[in-house]
Length: 98
Image 1 (cartoon, one colour):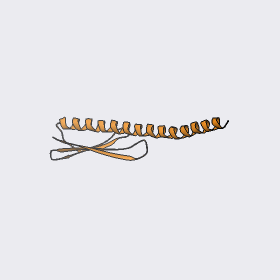
Image 2 (cartoon, rainbow, N blue to C red; image 1 turned 45 degrees about the vertical axis):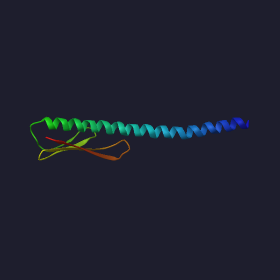
Image 3 (cartoon, rainbow, N blue to C red; image 1 turned 90 degrees about the vertical axis):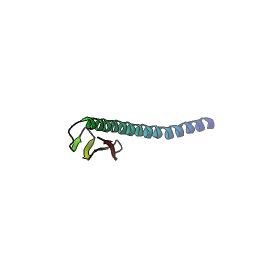
Image 4 (cartoon, rainbow, N blue to C red; image 1 turned 90 degrees about the horizontal axis):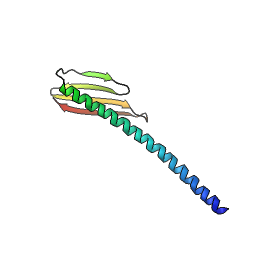
């Protein structure tokens, strides 16, 4: 009887520690997935801007990504910001030379 109680206690302790860890890991994976997607999109915007003939500053807003394009002499700056799944604002900038 005591062995069963000890085994049950160990199983409950494992479940109570592993389940929150899995939830936290999944949330962090989603944050990284969103960050990678937005950074990839910003990079694509920079490449597109470097290949365009017209150079003008722009502000645009996609689904959850707001980005600005600034031109300073030959330098192109594409900066984006968004609010991630954990409700934290993230900012990233890419730079290119025309």
